Every structure is written in C-alpha cells, then in structure tokens.
Length: 535
Image 1 (cartoon, helix red, strand yellow):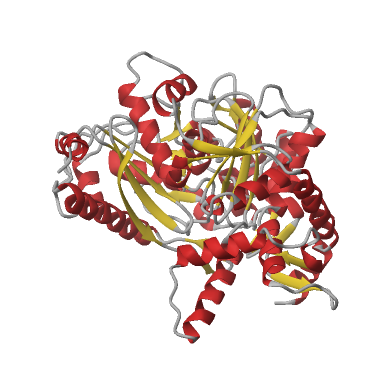
Image 2 (tube, rainbow, N blue to C red):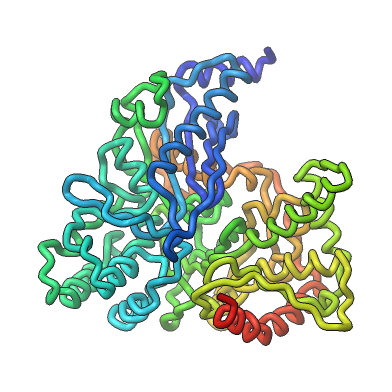
C-alpha cells in the first residue's frame, strides 16, 4: 500500500473522514472525503420517479431502500480499496432534490404521496400566492402544494402536523431534528433575507387566506426550523444509524450539518456562493443561479428567489427538463448497436455523439426538438411531450440531430437566464458548470457558453456534484475553527489551486444558438398542440 493509501486508510479507520449523500432525481450518491476535502470513495444507487395518478412521486420505502443500498455500496468500495469497515465519520450531511410536498400527522404518519419538484399541478395556487405575496411562488414550492391541496378540498390537510422536503425528511429520521438548511427551506416558503427566517408578513397573509377553513394549525407550526451553514443540526441517533446501516456497523453520535437542497450543494460544489458568481447544474433537470448584488426590479414568474446555504439572496432559473430525452436517444443508438453485436461502453457512446454534435450546421440543418418529458413553467406548458421535428428539405445528419438535442436541453434555461442577464443587466464574471451535461470534455461547456454568451468554467471536481457539496458543508460544520464565512472557507480550504478549464463564448456559436432560439420560440406552438391533442 502506497504512503497516500496508508494515510487515507488511517483517516477512514480513525473516523476522520466525512460523508455526504445526495438523493438526486435518478441517482442517490454517496461521497466520502478526506481532511483535504478530496473524494476518496463513492457509492450509488439508481432510481426513477414514477407517474402515479398524474403525480410524479417516489415512495418513502424506496427512499430507505435506496439510501441503504447506496451506503452499502460505499462500504463495499471502502472495504475493497482500503480494507476498512466503515463505522464512524467526523461529520455527515444529507441533501436532496428541492421543493415538493411531504406532510405528516402528529403520529409521524405520511398523509399524502410525496409530490416532487417535477409536478406542474399547482398552477392555481401558485398564481394566487404570487399575487397575494407580490413574490414569485413557483409551482414546485411546498407552500404552493399545500394551498393547492386546500383548494382541492383534500381531507388530509386538517391533520398536518409537519411539512418538509426530502432532505429534511431524511435528516429528521436520522437525527430526530425537524430542521432544514436555509437554501432548501426557501423552496418551501419565502425567506426574509434580513432575518434569515421565514417571511412573517407572508405567513400572516397565508393564515388569513385560509382562516375560514378552521384549521387548528398556523403555517409556522408546520415548517421545519431554519439553520444556516455551519450551525449545529443534531447528531446521528442509534435508530438513525440502524436505519442507514442495517448491518449494524455504523456508530451513533456523529454530528450532521443542516440538510440542504441540490441547488445549495451545487453552489458549494462550484464555489459559487459569493456575489457575481453563478453556476448551472445540468442533469435530469437544469437550473442556473446568480448570487445577486442588487434586488431585481420586479417580480418574474420565470425566476425563483432562493439563497446560498449561508443565506445570501440568489436568483434561480429552474427548468424541469434537461437530459432525460437526450439520454433516451443515446440509449436508442446503443440498442441499435447491439443488433449488430456491438456493446460499446456507454461513456464512449456519449463522448462520440456529443463530439459529433460540434460538426453540426449553424442552423442545426433545419431540425427542431423539444425535450419536455414533463411540464415546463418557464414556457407555460403544464405537461410535456418530447418532440422531434424536421423540414422536408432539412439536412438530416447525425451531427445536426445531436446538435439540436444538445441545444434544446438548454432552451428553457436560456429563457430564464436572459431575464437576469439581459433584462435586469446582472453581471457575472463567469458561470461554473456541473452535472452530467458537462461530462464530455469541451462540448456541453462550449454550448452553454454560446447560449449564455458568458465564459463557462468546469472544474475537475464538477463530476462529484451535490454529494461532494454536502460533504463540504459537513466539513465546514466541524472544521471551521477560524470562524470564516462560507465563501472564505471554500476559497481558503477547498478550491485553492483547484484545477479546471474555462472556455469563452465563440461568436459564431453565439449566433448559431440565437438562431436556434428563434426557431425554438416559434415552435412552442407545436409543443402546445402536442400537449393539447396527443393524450
């Protein structure tokens, strides 16, 4: 065993390593980091949401099956690589996809199916609350789901005693603490940036709005306590340890950082928590965020107002659809290859197809595509219909086909980001990209630079994603002895000397993307017709 391996083995064996786990849309991922914040082991579990009775959901049984399988995979990798059985950590953290609706009664029984961020079924409630609060309430937010359930006369609402997000739920079951990091809490109910707590005016307005319902609860009674990055969020209980590791090796008493949403961990993983920084997370869904140096001039329904894990205001353009349809086409090509006895590595297929896209024509050869598996609020579509359209005289080549699908993966995001960067004139020095869209070197990065007309950087650690980000937040909890702010800690201890690449937008690419965007906007009528008529 090399000296570095021996050092890492001792770090793990002595309980000095730190664990982060994130429940993403298609994968639950665990990342173990050392004292220098470097990933030293990973584990994972693949899962998919289900559309049941018109609602996108995951069962909570699958949440625990997945977490246990992910943790067991991590244990196996550590045992195989370092010869150590995982038993304790210096700290832990859990994050997950944000927003949605998870409600429980006073006996901790789940009252309704978990309604995820992907649902676009709260339009009436979101519109009413946006008007009432004079603050954009997206359909994904927990408060919109709650009010929509009230409008729907759903009987369970009377019995709600606690409402939280997926990360808050996991944290609660592992620690007994009903708390939430501010970056995730703001996806439940608007937060006052001055107090770093839920907006009291809006809470009072909501209570007044529903007072004729005769509920025994007030809104504030239902919400988890808000915590900032670095604040104590409890410790792993004996029951929580057994829940995560049924094998019984994991010890109780490990400190946990505040649970966060994937937006907050994405900011941390890309060092985008300071003013004039921004990042784009591109995977199953896609969102772009800018840390603001001034308030927006007015309310935009296309933009969410969220915060960094430290509570600083952030504007976010969040879109439900990014790579799912693209992945479907890649899988189709892989299946075609198997008919001829070819079984190439999926990573190689992605790389070759992504690079082929760069050979496409400026106008994508007259091809047009929409990647909407689900509804997209930014373009006012409550449902999705993936579409591919071409003109009779289109240049139907593989390069153009791949190019238009990579372009359309950013189409909805571009709509929201243009409001920030063009209409509001928000300045950003560069955007950090992370997520599966950027795995093929130089391709997704170049296309995003063209779409935003802004330099785009991708770090070597970008592929580690939110699980790494929440592990860093756990490290910040236990290692920030100098009482540095979060951005100071990241710059001094995590990203000093970090390697990566940055590409500037190529003028011809910018013009090409703008040309595509004009077709994309005109063609939304086709997507609308498909939603209305293809049932």
